[in-house]
Image (cartoon, rainbow, N blue to C red; front, side, top):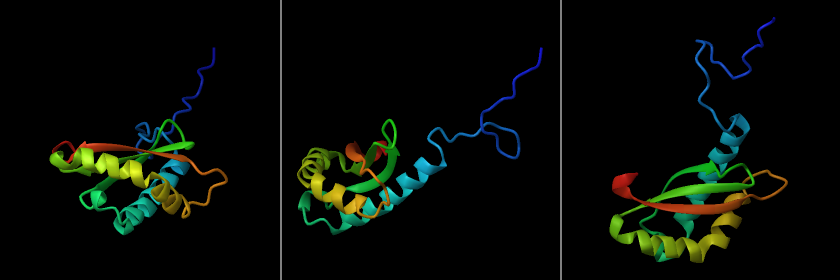
Length: 116
């Protein structure tokens, strides 16, 4: 009986790839992260002054992106509220930079900076 070929991605050295989302998803997330970081820096809401963007990942796929934002522990609630107020602006500003047929939804997770 023939053995089936292993279809997992392998690097040149033979170890399995650690890219669970695929290169296209990572490219979209990188572009979204750059655009969202710029939008956060330009946002006028004072509650976002202490927010620092950590990363953007698919959640669970490219139809929804999750942005992890770090903030000082004492400001997490204020940052979460400011993100909720600014959600539409941040999504529109960040996704305007993406060349996508369908604009993904955007969700935020705020983590204390000591956990980041």
